[in-house]
Image 1 (cartoon, rainbow, N blue to C red):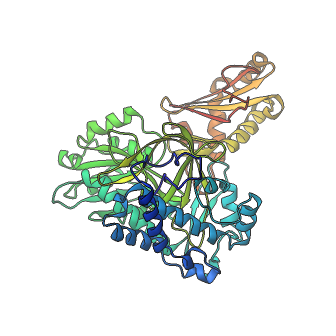
Image 2: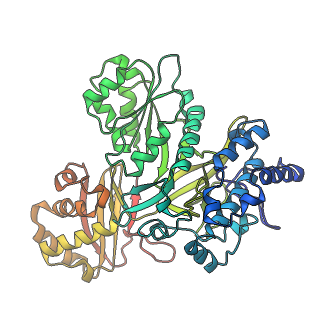
Image 3: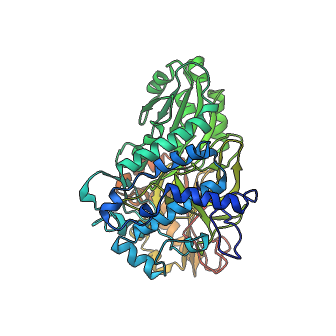
Amino acid sequence: MTLTTMPTAAGRPAHPNGAANGAANGADRAAARALAERLIPEGELRPRSVDDVAALPAFADKLERCGRMAGVPYCAAPHHLQDALVLRRLQQIVNIALLNPLWRERLHYFGVTGAPADQAEWERIPLSDKTVQRDMFMGARAGMVVPIDRGGFEVVASGGTSDGMPLEIVYSLRELRDTYRIAGAFMGAYQLGRYLRGTDPRWLFTTLADYQMWSSGTMVGGVLAHVPGVNYIGAGPVTAPVLEHMFSYPGPKALMGITAGIAMLAELGANMPAHARESFRVAMYGSGLLPQRKRAELRAVYPNVSVLSYFAATQAECVGLQLDHTSPELATVPGLHLVEIVDENGRAVAEGEEGELVVTRLHANEAPLLRLKLGDRVIRRSPLDGPGLRTGRFEFAGRTGDVLHLGDSQYSAVLACGALRAELLAASGVDLDHVAHDVQFVNHRESRALALLVAVDDAEHLTGAVEAALGAAGARGLFARALPRALSLFNDREATPESVERSGYDFRLAFVPRDSAEIERTAVGKVPLVRDRT
């Protein structure tokens, strides 16, 4: 279960990340706990050694047994039953993590010495971030409970776009295959099945990831390849002739790609035969925002297409899926992750409130990672409560990290600021480190305008001096030279000065008074480095 309703401590409200399960009485909840204890018995709940952990049955097997014992698929089981099994699983994962010296030191520091009995105790576990992830799973990979030298693992990389440094995570191949199968089955049953109809062959393409080490190339592709009843093609980047060739295959089609890749499909398919364009039924975008204008352009070329969001992360191959193109809510995949939406103290927010998206992978015996912040802001929405599917839902609200999204290129704002400082210093002699009180990027993503606002004491004088030094080219040249240096290891061929120039973005460097209202500040006076505007 995700966005779960966990058993609560006395006096605490039910976990607001889950369903309103007032229909479950005390007897129902007691029976659910008893079933969870049968599924994960005491001997498995508290493994005593690394060898015990390596020998544990897969959690995927527990989900299947739970469904058989409940008489319905796990996805359709009552929320209180899903919640009971997930709590039992979280207790097991914490016990596993405590076998590792680095995890044990971290948890003990925060007062966590044993498995959580309820939501309140679970929320005492500290949130993890990318720094924790690096410490645990890069270099010596000291956070792995089962050492990597035993084999049977896969390393998956991310570009590290928040700070410009690579980021890796380690998965058991067995557990990764389980999650592909679970997520793929969910997509087929609850998302694609309603759109890919008929008796003709059904097709699912992806244009993701040149780097197969990168998460989008391996993990999302792994899920898509396990959707039952479809023919999967990992196409990679495509040209108009290649797309037309693929769309010439008889039968309905779905395609998943980055947002910019989906937006380009209208142009790539403009000269396709009508029957090929009409066979395109689902366009799934995996990052960023897809403007309404681009959606309209897609529908003008592909009259039968529906646009859906596929929400994933390096640490979670399928966080949420948009099941209905008419509704923005994303549904979680029951049994795949614990998805929490929390406030600044790590406590669950109420329905309708915005919070930080936090994920704990439920299939992670050998390499657990507890309560990881993905760097996204989401809104908790009401859960789906059957008939049929029962699961949590949320709505994407934006990124929390200091990342500049120009189309689907993602730049470290920290690195971009440093590169712009160097370019400006060379061109004008003005050093941002010396003159700036605050700096803030403002990114108008739909109108494609990026501004760097610099709060200074003498805005008028500095504006004149810099304009005279930069001449007619203005700030555009600064940004074109600086942004490619703000790409990380796994993105370093993604942009050049020429591609930045062709991005369609307008660039502005603006000196503003120190107390200018143009710079957005938080309630406590902090200046976020990046502000996104749609």
